[in-house]
Length: 111
Figure 1 (cartoon, rainbow, N blue to C red):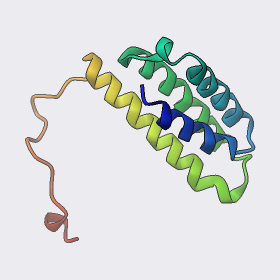
Figure 2 (figure 1 turned 120 degrees about the vertical axis):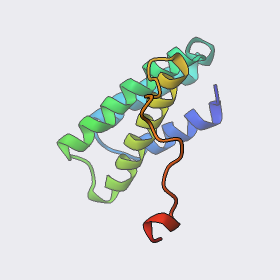
Figure 3 (figure 1 turned 135 degrees about the horizontal axis):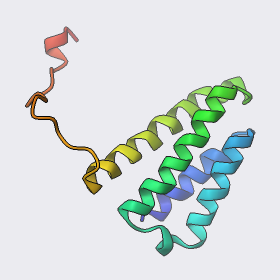
């Protein structure tokens, strides 16, 4: 577990004055108090899935400072990414046989 990362998440959540973000911060503080308890792919999945839900509800309610909107969206995307990476690592998501071998490049879409 990367303690510096979770401290960074806590700092970001502390700056957001919103109920769901305070709930998320409470969980991150519990992780920081006992990092060994939360060290592992399954534990990361559970924590990040809960945090993802918190910040998604914050966006649904929209009762945070308008200048914080980008920060909440960034946290939502970040937690979603952690959840999907953990699901892949746990074998809960499998590559489809019809999935492309490579994705389009920026040049292929004209950028």
